[in-house]
Length: 136
Image: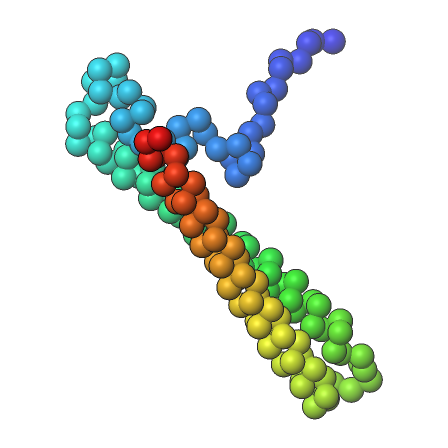
């Protein structure tokens, strides 16, 4: 039997992006080695920046969909109990609305607490930096 050639390693670009991902064009050292003009370097930098923005937007959208699906499933399992009719019962609708409102209030409160925490942390760091910066 003939020996098989080694297969190249498969790369999942979403988990391990290319080495140049997220690097500005000045770090690519394209000028002297490649002979590319400044216009091309600027265009490459713009394309890399656009790629980062699209990847961030895609990640945020996936996060939103995951949250939406989790919320939908949770409220559905908590509120819908009767599958004998095609119509949604008024109490199921009310329960679903309350479930959603409760979730939104909870996330809003968590967000507020998170902001308060970070403000306190920043103030503490500023105070510490102020003390460290003063001569003794």
